[in-house]
Structures are given as structure tokens and as C-alpha cells.
Amino acid sequence: MVRALLAASAVLIASPVHADTLVYNVDGITIDEQGKVKRFTQIVFDDDGIVTHTLERGEDRPEGIEFALDGNGRVMLPGMIDAHVHVMDIGFAALTLDLSDTVSLEDAFAKIAAFAEENPGRPWILGRGWNQEKWGLGRFPTAAELDAIVPDRPVWLERADNHANWANSAAMAMAGVTADTRDPEGGRVIRDANGNPSGIFIDNAIALVGNSVPAPRPEDRDAAFAMAQQSLIANGITAVADMGTEIADWQTYRRAADLGQLRIRIMGYADSLEAMELIAGPSPTPWLYQDRLRLNGIKLYVDGALGSRGATLKQPYSDEPGTSGLALTTPAQLRNRMSRAALDNFQTAVHAIGDAANADVLMAIEELSESYTGDRRWRIEHAQIVDVADLPRFGQLGVIASMQPLHQTSDRTMAEARLGEDRLGGAYAWRSILEVGGRLAFGSDAPVEPADVFAGIAAAISRTDANGEPFGGWRAHEAVTREQALAAFTSEAAFAGFADGRFGRLIPGERADFLFVDRDPLLASPSDIRATEILEVWVGGTQVFAR
Image 1 (tube, helix red, strand yellow):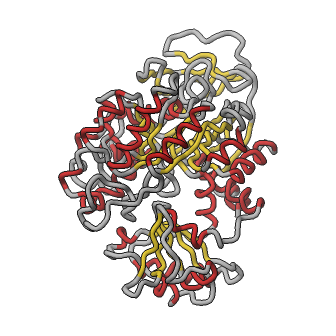
Image 2 (image 1 turned 90 degrees about the horizontal axis):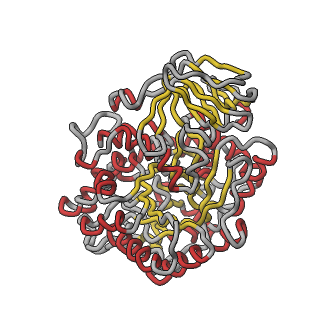
């Protein structure tokens, strides 16, 4: 499958160029050292793929140029950085059943049945991407409904947000899940009126069945990574923050790099303290493979997701008053884990979606900052629902809000239902976080949302979806400028991963990671930005993609 993909119209290529390369006749755009937009017409990089000069119109070229390339007047941008992805999940999603485009339960049934028929030798039917809210179902799907489609093999399907899974009866039987199975701490088994598991497992309950799924083989992981890397680069993404890096993931990246096949840059955040210590030892790893791989720190969780009502709220859910969410860690556990990481200078990136979760993380950062001083770059991943009263603390504490613009367009109607109008003041509050002095790094959360940076920029500046809805934008006062959106996907995303000075900007001393695209995102409309075509991708002065 990977070989076939490489033979498609958009291919990965590796064509190294010569020393001191000049690319001229470009409409170049970058964020400079002062955080301002800088335009240039020529760029020079050396044999190590590091920028030495950017030149504006009329400036003399430096001497010693050995190779010159005509940019043909095309727009050149820094390589895009996705500040929050799950690299291996992107690859495995491409190799398993994809339900992300289904619009109804019946639509999902058809895809599940077709996949099962096309793959009779697979012992488990695995997939992801379903969303009962998108289907307009008004409830979770059930194991009985899956049994009617695939009765003879276990089926295990991950929800779009990665915080709930849907099993059939065969999968539950394989895992030994019965009516007597208790909900684990931080997890919930959805049950029918008789107390029997209905087939939905939320947050920490996912492991009750997930632990019985056969682990991927190394060759499966290598194939999945090749798929993920191809997809990301084809979308103009040259670096990512990999949230929840497992030991097996890290070894997959190392294998690719040892074989000279690691093109993208990966900033890893371990999925546990044990993985962090085993991968990196007593401190974050050095930058490896010409700044292509580093273990920065750890990804922690405080709560679940809004769609499965696992995000923890200060007040109960408007559409289910009996719950306020699922806390995945206690306040003491969170502080102990953050402290353990900070003790050895590891960065912490904490998942927090609900207003209660965000308040707890901000409080923990404030408390720990008294003991752990210096450049910590505390990150909150998602920061979707924040109490307005807590917003100023992002600036006071220097917190990086690592947010995903496409979540806002996907979640807006659900957020209204879950929260009610009174609690939307700090929902997806990008501009407010900047105005109080916080920092923004943008990403996609792929494969939860597509790894489509230009769709993310369009959403960030308009607060509208691909159809231009809602007219005028949803809570449009929280939109950011084009320049701020570009920075959040480049220089600010690099800063969020301790990569500033290495890559993220086209300035002297940083890596020559750049794109050629067919339009200027600082001048185009949101709909035109979404239609941006990636023409070429270069990483470290080497062309890795051409359409």
C-alpha cells in the first residue's frame, strides 16, 4: 500500500542540492525575530540546509553561490508546524476502517459491512472516526447494532475524539467484559437499562477492551509511519508535536531515521512517565538526526472530551445535568506527575478541555512555578472551554495554549448544547488568550481533525467552516489575524516545542524548511485559503515533495 501511495501523482522525493544554494524570484513570507511578517525575494542556504541569507528586492546576492534555482515568482512560506498530532494514529487510521466521513448511522453500517467483506482474514475489525453528534443520532450507538453487521469477529471502533470506543459483543466477550465489570477510575462503561455494557467505553474504560487487541508488529508500525509521514508532508507540514509518544513509536521513528527515511521533524511528548524515562533518561534527549527528532517531555491528561461528556466542567452539562465530566487524574496526581517531569527539565503538555480542568492545570502551574523556575514553557493542550475569570492567568503565568482551530468549527453546535450560552464566553477563545498575554500554538489533533493547516488558518481568521457557516463567524470576536494564524502554525509552534532558533522561520541560522504554494494566505479570502495547493515541500534544503 505504501509503495502504491508513493507512485501517486504527489510523491515523496529526496533530491539533495549543492552547497550554498540560492532560490531567487520568490514571493517569500516568514515571521521574523520580532514576530512580524517579513517579505523577501531570494533565500540562500548552505550544504547543511541552514539559511544564511534572505534578500529583499534590490539587495545584492552574496558571493560563492554554487547553485541557483528560479522560484518562478511563486509564494514561499516556512514549513508548517502542527503543534498537536498523533503521528502513528494518522498512519494506522489510513490502514484501518475510516468512519470520519460518515454522516449517519446507516452510512457507518454500510462502510463497516463493506470493510469486513473486503478483509475476511482480519481477526479484528479496527477503525476510527465515528461521531454520533455528526450523525444526529442523539445517543451512542450500541453493540447490538454492530452485531447485526459483524457477528463473527470482534469489532473495535474509536470515536473521532479518541476518548470513546464502540465494541460489538464479540469484542467484549474476548475481553471478558460483563455486567459485573466495574467502571475504572476516570472511565465509564455505558450500560443499558439492565446494567449490561451497551458497547461504549469512555476514557479510562477503553482499556477494558483495548488491552485485548493484538499489538501491531514492527513492520505494521513502519508501514503506518510511512503513510503518516507521506500525508503530513503532502499537506505542507514539515514538523509536528507528537502527543502521547509510546516507546514503540519512538523506536519506529529511530528505525526510519537510521535508514535515512525520516523526513519530517518530530517533537515527542511521552505517553507516560515510564516511557519518558526509558526513552530520554535523566533529561530531554538532544536534537537527533539534524534536528529531526527530540523527546521534549510528557503528555498528561486531566479530563476527557466534550463530545463524550468527559470534559470536566465547573457546573453540570446543560444537556445531561447528572454529570460534570470525568476526571482522569486527581489534583494530587497531576501535580506529582508535573513535578516529576519538571524535576529533570522535561516539558509538560497537559490535556484540558473543560473549564474545571483548565482551572486546575492553571492552578498547578502557578503552584509549581514557585519551585521550578526558568524557561518551562508550560503547555495546555486544547484549552477549549475556559472560565472567563481564568483567562488572564494564561498571560500571568506565561502559559502556551496549544489549540486546534478546526475543533471550533466541528464542535460549535455541540458546545452550545453541552454548555448553554452562559458558558461560551471562554470557548475557543483564541484572541482573548493573546490579548491577556498568553501564547498560541496551532495544530490539528490529527487524525481527530484533518492535518490541514490551511483549513486551520481559514477557520482561525473567520470562525467559519468549509461552507462559510455560520455567516459572519461563530463568536467572531475571537478570530485572529492572518499574521497571528501564520505565526501560530510556524514560529509560535516551534517556540512551543523548544525548536525556536532551529526551525519555524526562514531567517539566517534556522533550517531551510519551506513550501511553494499557489497563493498568498495573507491576501486570500478564507475560502481561497482552504483551497491552497501545495506545490513543493523542502526540508533542510532538500526537496521532499513535488506535485
